[in-house]
Image (cartoon, rainbow, N blue to C red; front, top):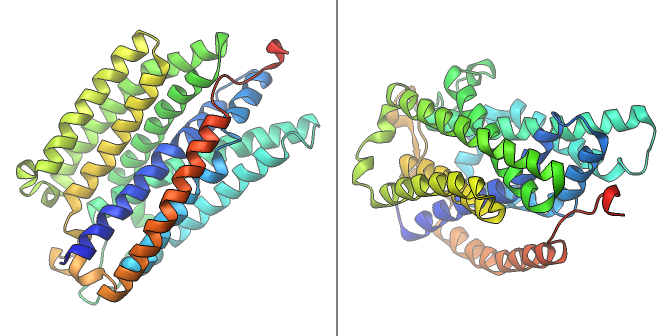
Length: 338
């Protein structure tokens, strides 16, 4: 393993974290909309994410592109393993995009119900599948000595991965509710705060359950992990972020709650990366079959050239997000405000 491989490993997880934080609140509010009865409140939630959703998904494409460029064998195995989940994910994203773009164009009651359902399910499915995919990777995929995936779609729907999926879903609901509380007012804002108050408890319970389950399902992830300064630091920071979520939600400091939930997501994904390193895809057939950074990366020349390209593009994407955030910062205007 050389420095470039390590940099690309870090870069991939940073892109994944950016996607989880930025699109996570979109997905979370979409899930919450499924349980929102009043049409005007559903309109407000959709309006809250409308300026951001398309730009936020860029980070998912960037993470996928990073895998394709830097770790071609890893990309190949992931596509072999998760073809069906990825296609379902894509269809869900399309459904969500259509619902956001056309909900205010077609006004019939039937169309409104269809778009409401598409927005909600189009948010729920990606949130669930992200956790399922990551949990399966952490658990290990059935990769043989030739680097060929030997599993099936049904083998991906195991209890461990489903628990990871529910953790991802609840975490995004917490994140979305925290964001929603910063963008709404009145009764809807109080509802968002209520979602925060119990989703963080469910998130912590699921997180503990998944950690305990990991000890039995993928014990190798803990080999030397408590001597890993990065993991230890992220673990302590995650505990602090949960404490801040608790205190700030009680104090109704909504922006602090949102920032703390962003830190919690960063820590969870960062700890997953620290557990995997230096493996990228562990094999649950034989750990010797695992794809490591050294075995699964592109040539140093490709890594160096593409790193330069990425370092030019990412600042532009960050500037775009800052401008959008400043342009649409503040509370959403509702019919009651008109």
